[in-house]
Length: 415
Image (cartoon, rainbow, N blue to C red; front, top):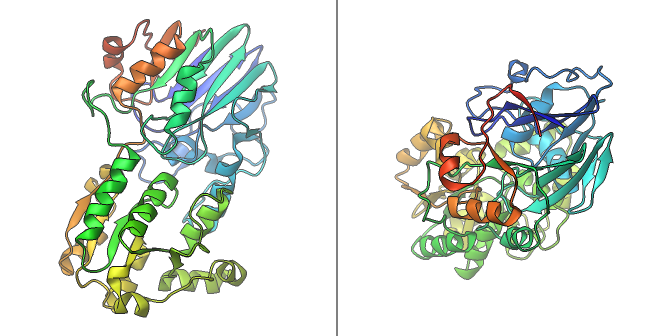
C-alpha cells in the first residue's frame, strides 16, 4: 500500500491523504486549508481522478464534518462517491440551505457504522467513532496488501463522548503498521497539562449565567453539539431557557439523536432573526418553520425578561437584539477557536459589543487530544510507525512517541 500526504504534514487543516493499492486509489479527507480566504478550487491537491473520469480513483473517505476536512468537496463532481457517517451527511445536508457559497453536501457514498468493516476495491475500511467537537467523527483503519494503516482523524478524550476514547484504548485494533496521528495540541499545551473537559466548560457557563442580570449570549457553532449540550445544561441549572434560530434547530434535528436538544423541548425556544425570516420567505421554508415553531418566541419576550434566557448567538441576531433593546445587563461569551476572533472574522461583532458596552469573555476547550492523551493512544495501539499529520509541530513527535517517521507533503512512500 502506497501513501502520500497531499496536504497536512506540517499544518493544521486542509487534510488530504492519498492511498494506492493494486493501481486503485482512495483519498482520506479533502479539507479546505485554514488559511484559505475563500473556498476556491485552486486549493485542490494534484490528485488524478478528482474530475470524475479516472476509473482507478475509487472515492473519498471523510473523517468528520469540519470544513478543514471536507470543504473542498465543493469542487468535485457528484459521480465521485464520498464516505462519511450517516449523521454527518444529514447535518451537512441540513446546513446547506443556510450556508453561503457552494456548501458541499454529498448525496452518494458509503455510510460508516462504527467498528463494522466494508470493502472498496482492494481496501478494507473499519471506522471507529471518536470523541471530537464535530458530531459523528471517525478514525479509520485501512487494510490493503497485508498492511494496516490507522488514520486518527481528529479526536480527543475530554468531551462528552470521552468513553469512545476509553473504548479504543482498552480494546485497540491490533498489528498497526502505520498510524497517521493528528497533533493539533503540540505547541499549544505542555506535555503535563490537560484541556478543560466539557463538564468543566458547563461549570464555567453556570458561573457566568449566575452573575448575568440580563440576557446571556454564547457565541458557538451550532454544529458543536457537545457545546450546545453544555450551554443548555448550564441554562437549566440557572433558571434559563435556551434560545436557538432555525438553522440550529434543523442541525440538531439532523443528528437523529433524541437525546440531543431539540426545538420542541420545554427548555428550548425558537427565535428567528429578521434576516432569517427574509430567507424563509424567499425560499418558501414555511413547512420547516412550522415544524420547529412549537416553542417560538419573539424579541419582545426577551426584552420583558432577559434574565430568563440564554441565546445561542449568531451575528444574524445583532440587529434584532439592538432594535428590541435586549442588551441591558447582558453578558457575551465567545466559545469557539480564538483564531477566528483574532484574525478579524468577527470584527463587526466586536464593534457591536463595544457600542453596547458588553464585554467579551472566552470559555472554550479544544476539540483535540492533549499531548498526554496522544501518548496514551499511541501506547495502546502500538503502531510500528507513527507519522505526523494535522500539526504545526511535526518535530515534537520524536520527543513523545517511538518509531516516528516524518513524510512531507507530496512524498509518496510504501507502508
